Amino acid sequence: MGGAARARKNAPPREEVLATAMDMIAERGLEKLTMAGLGREVGMSSGHLLYYFHSKDELLLQTLEWSEGRLGAERARLLNRPEPARDRLAAYVDLYVPDGHRDPHWTLWLEVWNRSQNADEEARVRQAAIENAWHRDLVALIAEGVSRGEFRRVDADRFAARLRALLDGFSIHVAIGLRGTDREQVLAHVREFIADALLGGGG
Image (cartoon, rainbow, N blue to C red; front, side, top):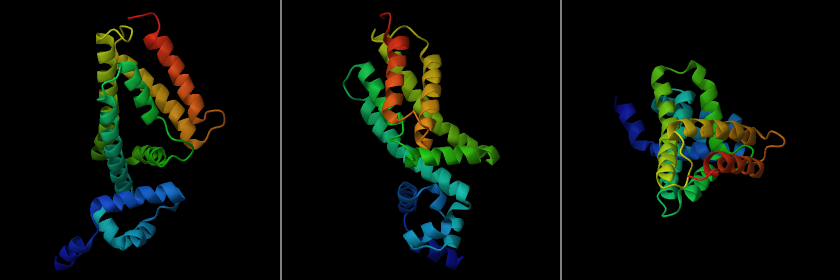
């Protein structure tokens, strides 16, 4: 027990470990992220990392949650700006879509979801919480735009589900570098969809 206490005292803060993991994914790709390599970066043994995170799957999920927390704060800032709902929706879409091929957040998101086939119920609940945060904010924004007459009268929850499915499909294409679907092309497709489905035909 004394050894474990010393390990906790000497360990870098959890956020530093997660931030370093994200930096390594950005710089070297997910395939180069190993417990041993991460341990060297933060001055811990891979054994100590496993003591804190229990598995690489848990490390990846916690890193994704940490990254989502930062995106959530940015999303809240964008959605609370005193702008028309349509401008804030454009900002939401801009934040959602990957920056490009091998975007580190989307690379991590894809890996965590790929591993989730074998995840336990608690991990699935945490993954659902990530998705629900994006969905909840989008529903609220669409409902606000409808109530103000900026958007057509749509069921905000159903429309948000469809829009996010479109965003997810296109975003995966961008993240994996599929030819013909770079970020700007995707944003143009989404803008056209929103204009036709949400802005067209008046309030």
